[in-house]
Length: 314
Image (cartoon, rainbow, N blue to C red; front, side, top):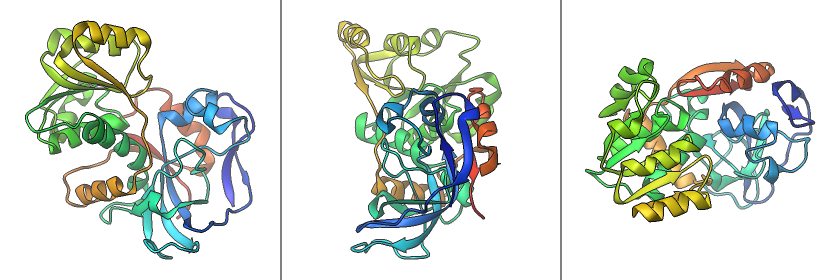
């Protein structure tokens, strides 16, 4: 099968498409023929030596965790899926899933049936970003109706889904984004949008119950200023440093690190929301597998609205 392999850590030029052995499913696993694979910031960070490179170990390895495709082979013991099912998922994360390839194998329960109303390209954009947003809001922050939720980088892959999920949960949703994305985010459900390039968000926002921080660094520290007493900052990209934890304690607010996990049941619920038209996923651009290096270069520009996707097989 064809797969994107990297033999060394580095820039997009280390990615190359070549033939590798096709995997066989073990008991409780399925083999999925990949139609499309989502591209996420963790992918290019890992490629360069950050992200999950420490988990994957030394190259060579195949990047990618977001999968949408069709079950081609079912291992012994699988009862939830059958050959021919259209599925999507984020298998194995943070261990290697190898989604930038024509086939992947993983436990059947890490997949679920993909949303029926969208293409494989759109479905492949959902799992990692949507599960990050869902698990941060629902499981970690336990957001309830009427709370005020601030989403940083609201126009990005995770951010635009977090806006929609928070609105679905009944929250008053505030997002930070450049001015060009304000109208779009308002249509997605944001009640307020702050242009972080024009004003300091802490001067424009206050009395927030939950901050979903998708930026990290100084943004995390500054976000403590906008939280109500007892409010929660979910620090997604960089975790919680001792300094951030101490600053939060001094201000009487809470901070939590976060890392997304495979979650078939949550993806099934998310698929229902997509099929009901309550949640939409934005795919800014789709690239063929052979243009994976260009896709990474595009993603690293940090100006993507929504997601980028690799088209693997038709």
